[in-house]
Length: 306
Ligand SMILES: [Zn+2]
Ligand SMILES: [Zn+2]
Image 1 (cartoon, rainbow, N blue to C red):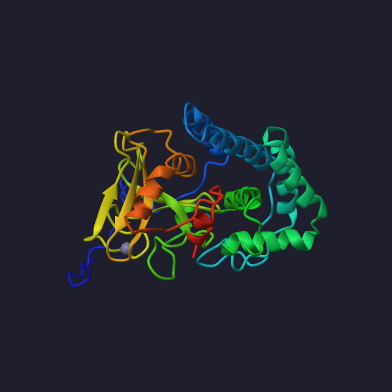
Image 2: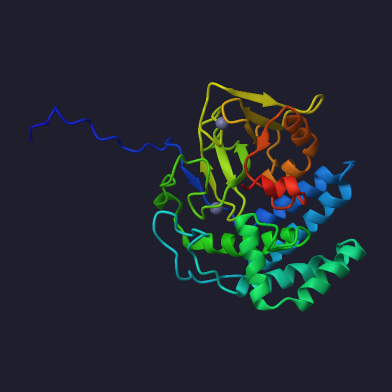
Protein backbone atom coordinates (compact mmCIF):
# COMPACT_ATOMS: atom_id res chain seq x y z
CA UNK A 1 0.00 0.00 0.00
CA UNK A 2 1.34 3.43 -0.99
CA UNK A 3 1.75 6.05 1.64
CA UNK A 4 0.31 9.46 0.81
CA UNK A 5 3.09 11.81 1.98
CA UNK A 6 0.96 14.89 1.42
CA UNK A 7 -1.28 14.02 4.37
CA UNK A 8 -0.08 14.76 7.86
CA UNK A 9 0.73 11.74 9.98
CA UNK A 10 -2.26 11.02 12.21
CA UNK A 11 -1.61 11.88 15.82
CA UNK A 12 -2.06 8.81 17.97
CA UNK A 13 -3.00 9.69 21.54
CA UNK A 14 -0.26 8.52 23.87
CA UNK A 15 -0.50 7.43 27.47
CA UNK A 16 1.03 10.75 28.42
CA UNK A 17 -1.67 12.82 26.70
CA UNK A 18 -3.08 15.45 29.02
CA UNK A 19 -6.55 14.45 30.22
CA UNK A 20 -8.81 17.43 29.46
CA UNK A 21 -11.50 16.61 31.99
CA UNK A 22 -11.42 15.07 35.44
CA UNK A 23 -14.81 14.01 36.78
CA UNK A 24 -15.37 14.28 40.54
CA UNK A 25 -14.52 11.31 42.76
CA UNK A 26 -17.99 11.01 44.23
CA UNK A 27 -17.10 8.47 46.98
CA UNK A 28 -15.02 10.88 49.01
CA UNK A 29 -15.02 14.35 47.44
CA UNK A 30 -16.98 16.18 50.14
CA UNK A 31 -15.52 14.04 52.89
CA UNK A 32 -12.00 15.10 51.83
CA UNK A 33 -13.17 18.73 51.67
CA UNK A 34 -14.52 18.48 55.22
CA UNK A 35 -11.22 17.02 56.44
CA UNK A 36 -9.27 19.84 54.77
CA UNK A 37 -11.58 22.49 56.26
CA UNK A 38 -11.18 20.99 59.72
CA UNK A 39 -7.42 20.92 59.42
CA UNK A 40 -7.32 24.53 58.17
CA UNK A 41 -9.65 25.63 60.99
CA UNK A 42 -7.12 24.76 63.69
CA UNK A 43 -5.82 28.03 65.09
CA UNK A 44 -7.40 30.02 62.24
CA UNK A 45 -9.03 33.44 62.79
CA UNK A 46 -12.13 32.07 61.00
CA UNK A 47 -12.04 28.71 62.80
CA UNK A 48 -15.77 28.65 63.61
CA UNK A 49 -16.85 29.37 60.07
CA UNK A 50 -14.40 26.90 58.50
CA UNK A 51 -15.62 24.29 61.00
CA UNK A 52 -19.22 25.00 60.05
CA UNK A 53 -18.51 24.69 56.31
CA UNK A 54 -16.83 21.36 57.17
CA UNK A 55 -20.16 20.24 58.68
CA UNK A 56 -21.94 21.29 55.47
CA UNK A 57 -19.43 19.24 53.45
CA UNK A 58 -20.03 16.17 55.64
CA UNK A 59 -23.79 16.59 55.16
CA UNK A 60 -23.18 16.90 51.40
CA UNK A 61 -21.25 13.61 51.33
CA UNK A 62 -23.99 11.87 53.27
CA UNK A 63 -26.65 13.19 50.87
CA UNK A 64 -24.56 12.31 47.79
CA UNK A 65 -24.01 8.73 48.96
CA UNK A 66 -27.73 8.00 48.76
CA UNK A 67 -28.61 10.16 45.73
CA UNK A 68 -28.73 8.53 42.28
CA UNK A 69 -30.84 10.81 40.06
CA UNK A 70 -31.57 9.87 36.47
CA UNK A 71 -30.61 12.27 33.67
CA UNK A 72 -33.41 14.84 33.35
CA UNK A 73 -34.69 16.63 30.26
CA UNK A 74 -32.30 19.14 28.75
CA UNK A 75 -29.16 17.05 29.21
CA UNK A 76 -26.73 15.99 26.49
CA UNK A 77 -25.03 17.97 23.75
CA UNK A 78 -21.64 19.65 23.95
CA UNK A 79 -22.19 20.88 27.56
CA UNK A 80 -24.04 17.81 28.85
CA UNK A 81 -25.30 19.09 32.22
CA UNK A 82 -25.69 22.77 31.23
CA UNK A 83 -27.39 24.46 34.19
CA UNK A 84 -29.06 26.99 31.90
CA UNK A 85 -30.87 24.21 29.96
CA UNK A 86 -31.31 21.31 32.32
CA UNK A 87 -34.72 20.72 33.97
CA UNK A 88 -33.50 19.97 37.47
CA UNK A 89 -35.32 17.29 39.42
CA UNK A 90 -37.07 18.65 42.56
CA UNK A 91 -35.14 15.95 44.42
CA UNK A 92 -32.53 18.66 45.02
CA UNK A 93 -35.07 20.28 47.42
CA UNK A 94 -35.00 17.12 49.56
CA UNK A 95 -31.23 17.36 49.56
CA UNK A 96 -31.51 20.98 50.76
CA UNK A 97 -33.81 19.96 53.63
CA UNK A 98 -31.53 17.04 54.48
CA UNK A 99 -28.41 19.26 54.61
CA UNK A 100 -30.13 21.93 56.71
CA UNK A 101 -31.41 19.30 59.15
CA UNK A 102 -27.91 17.80 59.43
CA UNK A 103 -26.11 21.09 60.10
CA UNK A 104 -28.74 22.69 62.35
CA UNK A 105 -27.27 21.30 65.60
CA UNK A 106 -23.83 22.62 64.61
CA UNK A 107 -24.95 26.06 63.39
CA UNK A 108 -24.92 29.22 65.56
CA UNK A 109 -28.38 29.12 67.28
CA UNK A 110 -29.65 32.41 65.79
CA UNK A 111 -28.66 31.41 62.31
CA UNK A 112 -30.17 27.93 62.73
CA UNK A 113 -33.50 29.45 63.87
CA UNK A 114 -33.53 31.96 61.00
CA UNK A 115 -32.64 29.34 58.39
CA UNK A 116 -35.24 26.81 59.57
CA UNK A 117 -37.91 29.53 59.87
CA UNK A 118 -37.30 30.59 56.28
CA UNK A 119 -37.35 26.99 55.07
CA UNK A 120 -40.62 26.19 56.87
CA UNK A 121 -42.42 29.09 55.19
CA UNK A 122 -40.98 28.46 51.73
CA UNK A 123 -43.06 26.84 48.98
CA UNK A 124 -41.47 24.51 46.41
CA UNK A 125 -41.73 27.48 43.99
CA UNK A 126 -39.73 29.65 46.42
CA UNK A 127 -37.03 27.00 46.60
CA UNK A 128 -36.80 26.93 42.80
CA UNK A 129 -36.41 30.72 42.85
CA UNK A 130 -33.61 30.39 45.40
CA UNK A 131 -31.90 27.86 43.12
CA UNK A 132 -32.27 30.18 40.15
CA UNK A 133 -30.92 33.10 42.21
CA UNK A 134 -27.95 31.00 43.30
CA UNK A 135 -27.16 29.75 39.78
CA UNK A 136 -27.45 33.22 38.31
CA UNK A 137 -25.58 34.90 41.18
CA UNK A 138 -28.60 37.09 41.94
CA UNK A 139 -28.98 37.75 45.68
CA UNK A 140 -32.43 39.29 45.07
CA UNK A 141 -33.84 35.81 44.55
CA UNK A 142 -31.81 34.03 47.17
CA UNK A 143 -31.01 35.47 50.59
CA UNK A 144 -27.26 35.67 51.15
CA UNK A 145 -27.58 33.67 54.37
CA UNK A 146 -29.35 30.84 52.55
CA UNK A 147 -27.01 30.80 49.55
CA UNK A 148 -24.42 28.40 51.03
CA UNK A 149 -27.16 25.86 51.81
CA UNK A 150 -28.76 26.14 48.37
CA UNK A 151 -25.33 25.96 46.74
CA UNK A 152 -24.47 22.89 48.83
CA UNK A 153 -27.66 21.10 47.73
CA UNK A 154 -27.24 22.01 44.06
CA UNK A 155 -23.60 20.88 44.17
CA UNK A 156 -24.75 17.49 45.47
CA UNK A 157 -27.39 17.16 42.73
CA UNK A 158 -25.05 18.16 39.89
CA UNK A 159 -22.17 16.09 41.25
CA UNK A 160 -24.50 13.05 41.42
CA UNK A 161 -25.46 13.61 37.77
CA UNK A 162 -21.80 13.48 36.68
CA UNK A 163 -21.86 9.73 37.49
CA UNK A 164 -23.67 9.33 34.14
CA UNK A 165 -20.79 10.88 32.15
CA UNK A 166 -17.63 9.58 30.51
CA UNK A 167 -14.75 12.03 30.99
CA UNK A 168 -13.20 11.34 27.58
CA UNK A 169 -16.39 12.23 25.70
CA UNK A 170 -16.23 15.87 26.86
CA UNK A 171 -14.16 18.43 25.00
CA UNK A 172 -13.51 22.14 25.33
CA UNK A 173 -16.40 24.45 26.04
CA UNK A 174 -17.95 25.44 22.70
CA UNK A 175 -18.37 29.13 23.66
CA UNK A 176 -15.42 31.43 24.14
CA UNK A 177 -12.21 30.24 25.68
CA UNK A 178 -12.26 27.10 27.74
CA UNK A 179 -11.50 28.53 31.14
CA UNK A 180 -14.51 30.66 31.81
CA UNK A 181 -17.24 28.05 32.18
CA UNK A 182 -17.31 24.43 33.12
CA UNK A 183 -17.52 22.19 30.01
CA UNK A 184 -19.86 19.89 31.95
CA UNK A 185 -22.41 22.26 33.56
CA UNK A 186 -21.62 25.80 32.33
CA UNK A 187 -20.95 27.21 35.83
CA UNK A 188 -17.86 29.34 36.51
CA UNK A 189 -14.80 27.91 38.28
CA UNK A 190 -14.02 28.69 41.95
CA UNK A 191 -10.32 28.79 41.11
CA UNK A 192 -7.72 26.31 39.95
CA UNK A 193 -5.49 23.51 41.22
CA UNK A 194 -1.96 22.72 40.14
CA UNK A 195 -2.19 18.99 40.62
CA UNK A 196 0.16 16.38 41.98
CA UNK A 197 -0.15 12.69 41.12
CA UNK A 198 0.87 10.42 38.29
CA UNK A 199 -1.10 11.49 35.21
CA UNK A 200 -1.65 15.15 36.01
CA UNK A 201 1.57 16.11 37.89
CA UNK A 202 2.22 19.84 37.59
CA UNK A 203 -0.81 20.46 35.35
CA UNK A 204 -3.34 23.17 36.13
CA UNK A 205 -7.07 22.40 36.29
CA UNK A 206 -9.96 24.79 36.82
CA UNK A 207 -12.40 23.54 39.48
CA UNK A 208 -16.14 23.94 38.94
CA UNK A 209 -18.24 25.77 41.53
CA UNK A 210 -21.27 23.55 40.80
CA UNK A 211 -20.58 20.00 39.56
CA UNK A 212 -17.03 19.63 40.96
CA UNK A 213 -15.56 18.63 37.59
CA UNK A 214 -12.06 19.91 36.78
CA UNK A 215 -10.81 20.91 33.35
CA UNK A 216 -7.33 21.55 32.03
CA UNK A 217 -5.99 25.02 31.34
CA UNK A 218 -2.39 25.96 30.65
CA UNK A 219 -0.58 27.59 33.55
CA UNK A 220 0.25 31.30 33.60
CA UNK A 221 -2.79 32.30 31.56
CA UNK A 222 -5.53 34.56 32.90
CA UNK A 223 -8.68 32.55 33.66
CA UNK A 224 -10.92 35.42 32.61
CA UNK A 225 -9.34 36.65 29.34
CA UNK A 226 -6.69 34.05 28.45
CA UNK A 227 -3.84 36.63 28.41
CA UNK A 228 -0.43 35.25 29.42
CA UNK A 229 1.98 38.22 29.15
CA UNK A 230 0.41 40.32 31.90
CA UNK A 231 -0.11 37.68 34.58
CA UNK A 232 1.42 38.22 38.02
CA UNK A 233 1.16 36.34 41.29
CA UNK A 234 0.37 37.46 44.82
CA UNK A 235 0.90 35.35 47.91
CA UNK A 236 0.48 35.78 51.64
CA UNK A 237 3.70 37.03 53.22
CA UNK A 238 5.20 34.35 55.43
CA UNK A 239 2.75 31.78 54.01
CA UNK A 240 3.75 28.48 52.38
CA UNK A 241 2.54 29.55 48.89
CA UNK A 242 -0.03 26.73 48.73
CA UNK A 243 -2.45 29.43 47.55
CA UNK A 244 -1.56 32.23 45.16
CA UNK A 245 -3.71 34.84 43.48
CA UNK A 246 -3.10 34.92 39.73
CA UNK A 247 -3.78 38.51 38.68
CA UNK A 248 -4.07 39.89 35.17
CA UNK A 249 -3.09 43.42 34.18
CA UNK A 250 -4.97 43.07 30.89
CA UNK A 251 -8.49 42.61 32.35
CA UNK A 252 -7.81 43.50 36.03
CA UNK A 253 -9.24 40.29 37.44
CA UNK A 254 -7.68 37.60 39.60
CA UNK A 255 -8.34 33.98 40.37
CA UNK A 256 -6.76 31.78 43.03
CA UNK A 257 -4.43 28.88 42.27
CA UNK A 258 -3.99 26.10 44.85
CA UNK A 259 -0.73 24.13 44.61
CA UNK A 260 -1.23 20.47 45.44
CA UNK A 261 2.52 19.86 45.04
CA UNK A 262 2.96 22.09 48.13
CA UNK A 263 0.08 20.38 49.92
CA UNK A 264 -1.63 17.34 48.33
CA UNK A 265 -4.74 17.90 50.49
CA UNK A 266 -5.33 21.42 49.05
CA UNK A 267 -8.98 21.90 48.12
CA UNK A 268 -10.30 24.70 45.98
CA UNK A 269 -13.27 25.61 48.24
CA UNK A 270 -11.51 25.06 51.57
CA UNK A 271 -8.19 26.73 50.79
CA UNK A 272 -9.99 29.63 49.17
CA UNK A 273 -12.09 30.32 52.29
CA UNK A 274 -9.02 30.02 54.50
CA UNK A 275 -7.10 32.68 52.55
CA UNK A 276 -9.52 35.63 52.59
CA UNK A 277 -6.73 38.10 53.51
CA UNK A 278 -5.26 37.37 50.07
CA UNK A 279 -8.55 38.52 48.47
CA UNK A 280 -8.37 41.71 50.51
CA UNK A 281 -4.75 42.31 49.43
CA UNK A 282 -5.42 41.73 45.73
CA UNK A 283 -8.70 43.67 45.91
CA UNK A 284 -6.82 46.66 47.36
CA UNK A 285 -4.34 46.39 44.50
CA UNK A 286 -7.27 47.01 42.13
CA UNK A 287 -8.20 43.53 40.90
CA UNK A 288 -11.71 42.07 40.86
CA UNK A 289 -12.23 38.43 41.60
CA UNK A 290 -13.22 36.09 38.75
CA UNK A 291 -15.32 33.08 39.80
CA UNK A 292 -17.40 32.69 42.96
CA UNK A 293 -16.98 30.66 46.09
CA UNK A 294 -20.61 29.92 46.97
CA UNK A 295 -19.66 29.48 50.64
CA UNK A 296 -18.35 33.02 50.89
CA UNK A 297 -21.24 34.91 52.45
CA UNK A 298 -20.40 38.43 51.27
CA UNK A 299 -21.78 40.76 48.64
CA UNK A 300 -18.31 40.70 47.07
CA UNK A 301 -18.42 36.92 46.79
CA UNK A 302 -21.67 37.13 44.86
CA UNK A 303 -20.75 40.18 42.82
CA UNK A 304 -17.76 38.15 41.65
CA UNK A 305 -20.12 35.88 39.70
CA UNK A 306 -21.03 38.62 37.24
ZN1 LIG B 1 -19.40 22.02 36.35
ZN1 LIG C 1 -7.16 38.75 32.08
